[in-house]
Image (tube, rainbow, N blue to C red; front, side, top):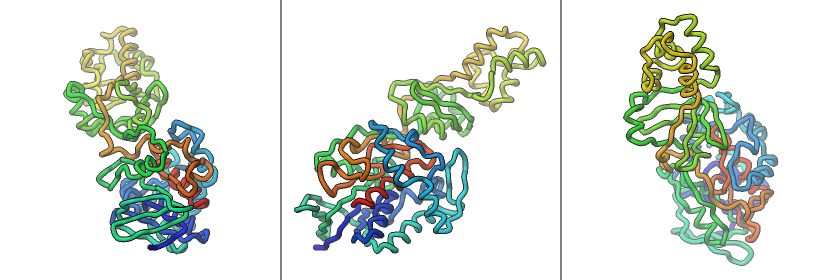
Length: 392
């Protein structure tokens, strides 16, 4: 039997952060990972360059049944704190768009940063370790694996959500919460592409690969970024963002030309070049292929002079309020994160510890806090991991 002050379960972003913060406080820390490699999701993130935080991180960038819960952790360890750590390790990075910070080189730079800090604190890391049983023992916990028994004062669950099962995602953290009487809120895939029905695909399938800057909206939220047509439906940053707010059965409105008053522009084009075809004029704004397909309900081959101003206004409204009704999403297989999880009502926002079970912590994606696309989920991992590491 081995004894530690802190056992952290899950060597992803939140778990590694927590482990080194606790260890550098002088705690004896064991970090357990069931895979053979630590930080697997970090390595594949951001196209292999890891969008490690966002300069504009605020509580409004997160979804939770308790929208105030994330405020404490985000204020205790901010994006600027993590950026300072990246600078300390001399990792080159750049802003891509909208405050999103990416490594210039590879995601491995961030994993190495975390490993170096863990080594500095003396963290013991064990991979390929399967936990078979966890139970309370005295004022702490007993953790049983396939080949050993470990006791600890503090147990930190950082096992992630259900997204991308091919990377090893399971519901282990939710089972631990349930075992100790903590409530789990319903989970579902988030930051995920939409799947459209066969009739829609028949109409739009040839646009697969076409991208357009749009504003995608539900009744509660709007996002402006690129939309991408796929062989299954639609994806791209704007769609991934709005998927976190979409409910099954809802429609999504998409403004295909958010920068302009299309009706006024079409009327001006009609006056300037009345003999031009509608699809030719629209193709200046969208691709020709896109213009032809999106306007197939209208005789887009007609001259602008053949349309009344009222008709042009109606066409403009169609493109400003193009509506799709997804059948479903691609699910956890391609979802970047998981919505829902361990109910924040059961946790202290200041420490991430269970209110009822001293020494039991939940951090990162396993908790009901989900960030927008763009580095916010990594920042939640750093912030929640730091807070737990300072208190475990």
